[in-house]
Amino acid sequence: MSEEDVYTQLAGRVNFPKSRYIRMIFRRLLTPEDAEMVLSLPATVEEFAEKHHIDREKAAEKLDLFARKGVVIPFEKGGVKRYSCVSHVIQVHDATIHGTMNKRYDPPCDDIIETWKKFRETEWFEVLRDMEAAGRFWGRAIPAYSTVADQPDLQPIEDLRAILKNAPGIAVVDCPCRWLQVQRGECDKPTFVCLSLTPGSVKYINDQKIGKQLTLEEGYRLLEECEQAGLIATTGMGDKVRQLCFCETNECIILRPQVKYGYKLWGPSRYQAEVDPDKCKGCKTCLERCYFGAIEMYKVPGKKKAKARVDAEKCFGCGLCAVTCPTKALSMKAVRPVEYLTQ
Image 1 (cartoon, one colour):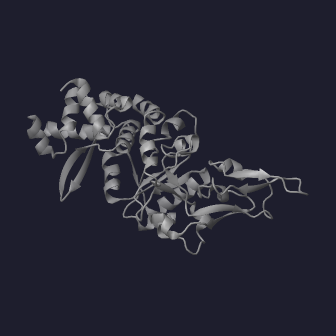
Image 2 (cartoon, rainbow, N blue to C red):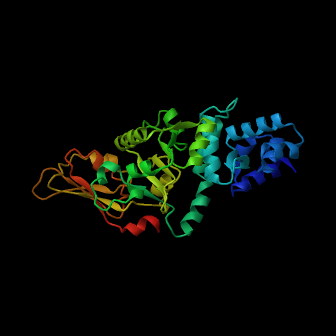
Image 3 (tube, rainbow, N blue to C red):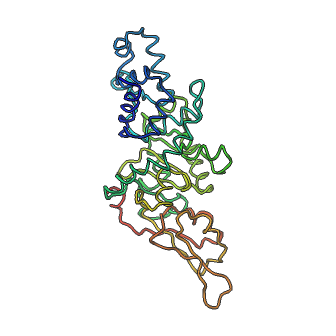
């Protein structure tokens, strides 16, 4: 197999065989010989050793290195540990960035993160067009907990505290989208905020040493930190919450193209912000907190100061504007049925 063919096949494993950037990333992380080894997976250590005519110790070292680089994912089933080639573009995006930022191999390929940033601004839009063409939302916002805690019909899968309480495990990693910008001083928001909530993902994070397992109380504190920092909580659609992302729209792999380029990929929460004009003092704090341009100031006859109002079509239902409103003029109201959460 030619050198170009082997990297094209690897890019094909994540459904992107023609991607220039993904092929660059695999080429940066793997020699042609190692790339062919990765293509031979899945396998146990013993199967891998036999297939490539190497001893078990060397096979284990190879597979461990591939896992630390983020091109191979180890998993256990029935007490048997196997290694599999990455199989989705988001999976390889996150795994290779976490391997790089946590310096899981030597020397780390720091340019990997910059290459992924270029991918997100170019080739990634091909994936987004296909997602949008499916005609459905792939994920949704979850409102900041403090803004909906007293809602009578708040559901467990939209209640951030209940989501953590019901999760079989909680682990946190750095945001792979925003980490580089924080290192450059272009963003001042916390990055150690992306939560995984399944036993397998928590084990993976612990084993690969790319994050930290959290107690429930630590998880609650993280929710409060994200609220105050102005980070939007999102998750996938459906009746199970397997992960929680806390991001903003400047760099998020989904929200940036949605806000900047008009893609329709992530839906709002069931809630919408509303303003009590009698309480609004026109301080404009909410304008700075809204990433979606959903709040505007309008002139009230007979009043010196303009007041805020919400554009229902633009509101994402994240509640961040209500978190820091000094006069409590902003609140959240349910505007979509419960069935919306699991459609």
